[in-house]
Amino acid sequence: MAGSADPWALLQECNKALSGRSILDLFRADASRVRRMSAEVGPLYADYSKHLLDQAAIDALVALARDSDLENGVRSLLDGAEVNSTEQRPALHTALRSAVGRGAIADSARREAEDGVQRIRALVERIHAGEFAGVTGKPIDRLISIGIGGSDLGPRLAVDALSDGGGMRVDFLANVDGTAVSRLLADADPERTLFCVISKSFGTRETLLNASTARRWLAARLGVEETVAGRQFVAVTANPERAMRFGIREDAILPMWDWVGGRYSVWSAVGMPLMAGIGPDRFDAFLAGAAAMDEHFASADFEHNLPVMLALIGIWYRNVQGLPAYAVVPYDDRLGRLHEYLQQLDMESNGKRVTRDGRPVPRATGPICWGGIGTNAQHAFFQWLHQSPDVMPLEFVGVRNPDHDHPVHHRELMANMLGQSWALLAGRSHEATAELLASDGRPPELAPHMAFPGNRPSTTFLLERLDPAALGALLALYEHRVFVQGWIWGINSFDQWGVELGKTLANRVLPWLEGGPVDADDVDGSTIDLIRRLQSDSDLT
Ligand code: F6P
Image (tube, rainbow, N blue to C red; front, side, top):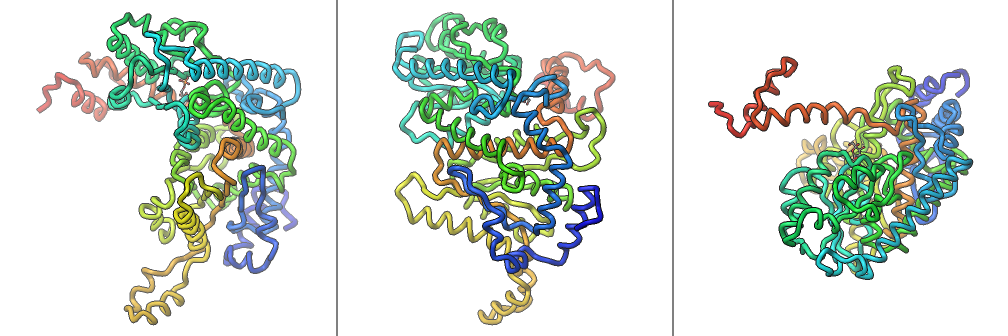
């Protein structure tokens, strides 16, 4: 499609050229489509052929990536340039697991990371060996990890996905809702439970309140001073002074660094609960899986580069077709938290409205991410996916080899996954539906209700098995996809100023809920009314 130098305009032309065609037409026209539009990186296979994209559109997307100087973007990320411009920091999560970064900054980050991982390993081995005992001398057999956002979602997802029941029990406490802490502590053995407080800043109020409540509970149950109970705590933080002020011993504090963003930190000591739950060797395999994806990302041509191609397909939907969201549906109960993890990764990274230099972004940026588990989701929101007038690109995640001995279940599960992506793609025309109804003797008026528009796009990921390497590769793939999109939009994917204002105002509301007079003149009527309704001594009638 010659004639247009502006890559965005070229994409619009490609979209116009595709109007009236269906994804099925594209399959019929090209027997090599699946081979061309799929890739395998280690244990992860991705099929992205079920999208309304022809070669001209793919070429235009790749041209957009080149025009955005993506090659430089990838090198900047991996080598440790200050890609987080508002906080003047690199984002060197790749240094936690691979050697793809070049130069002194990446080298030094890698050295710190290696030291860090040795320290976590040593601690976890001591815990597993019973050498890191509780305050009363009993060995630890349960870990409660206290943290929120990036200090929770990654390890929580990975523990859910990879624990096989043979390792140490690991639980997570994130929300400041008192129900969460009460439920977790209800069956905890105070003598054998270790608390791991994870907070990069060690200033997150939810985490600090949960940690204080846990320590008070522990002190009361053990009949010791809180300072003594603090010995049954470890911390992961980039702010060790604050952790020590909280009462955690210096030698029980594992490092975090400014150069790792919270939502990119599961590969660091933030993954300590994961290592505790699955063991150091499987944690290493998790890092190795991510490293394989880093190497692929750093070296494959854009046309064959999985994170780049998936990012470009996302841009096609977001910016060319104007779709606001995508859904992720793993057909594996162990990945039930994948969409929660991706919500932070994608939406906190790319939910931005200004470019790196502070000007309005001229187009839509990060999409909404949502999802649920197959097959459960089929009985919840799939009706909408199949027949609503809105189109939602989907990402299916399946696993070839299950880790249970119910092969019949697995076949049923995988048949459902393929049946759904097929139905979304092929649909069922009004005519075919009418014929079906006639053959069953059912009323023809049902045809419009029972027809399926089809032509609904999806990507399918297949993991060889849900093991640490495959999960590592999948999460690293998503990290890089988010980065590529942010780079092309020209935004900073590594800050999160949008979470600050609500926190600040919550701090202003707190004293009012304690009964203080609402004396500020910048509070709206609705908020004042709700504060009064929540004040414990409210006399509202
Ligand atoms: O939600 C905002 C945020 O800053 C996230 O980016 C971060 O992952 C989370 O809070 C927790 O922060 P911290 O690890 O500093 O407690």
